Every structure is written in C-alpha cells, then in structure tokens.
Image (cartoon, rainbow, N blue to C red; front, side):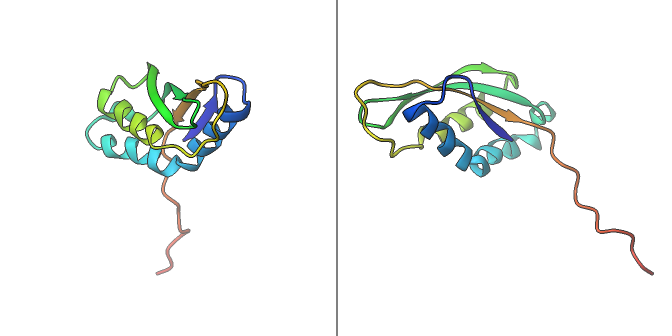
Length: 116
C-alpha cells in the first residue's frame, strides 16, 4: 500500500502526505475488511482530495476517483483521512490530492524446507 502525492508538496500538503503515510496500517485495514467478501479489492487505487482549513483541521475528504467501485471501502479510507489533524494554521486553505494505491498482498513467508 502506498500513498502518493498528486499535487505539489508544499507546507500543509507535505504534512498531509507524511501523516497519511504514517496511517498506512489503518488504510490497509480498510482493504482487509472487504477482501474476504469482495475479490475486486485486491489491487487498485482511490484518488482523494483532502481539504485543510486555515486552522489546520481536515474540513473535507472527497473521493475523486475510485478504481474499486466499493463505496464502503472508499468511505473507510475517507474516514481514516478525516481523522488526520494537527496541521499548522495557515493564511489560506489547502486541498492536496492523494492517491492511495493498494497492491496485491505479498505471499506468505516461506520458512524453508521442513526437516523430517
């Protein structure tokens, strides 16, 4: 799972990207929650716009594109990003665009040959 910037990384935008990457575990849990019932959530991306107000709070998270077509999963990702916060106050609001990309799960680790 990766979080990629779709806008220039300056000020709040850079902090949003870094903070979103720090929440990778919570974002991955969104996919895990739906993987058992929806085989289509294995691989794809969700493009989001995260609006940060002048006080440094997340005021809105909008899904711009959802490759999964799974509304509940997109809402889960939105919820994770809505809980980001603690950004510095600024003179003007910012709306960085992020791409949350989910890749295939790595195969389970192999423990080598078993010895009888």
